[in-house]
Length: 71
Image (cartoon, helix red, strand yellow):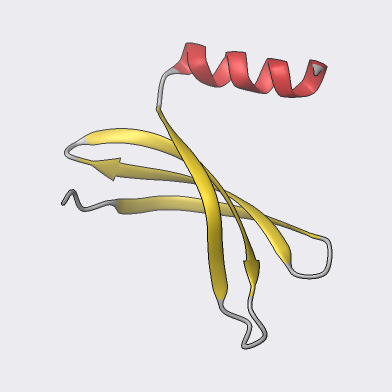
């Protein structure tokens, strides 16, 4: 199983106990961008419900950010 190294993480909280997290990670000397969503349980711990990972490609990042802004 590959090991991920977290480089940076940004989190946006919304609703009562939900969050979206964007992180940059490396695995096998390649960088990826991950977008995850989840919630905080009653003990205040993060629980993840789903996510997606993409290669750190400038064209792909531009496409995603442009489409998010216009959709």
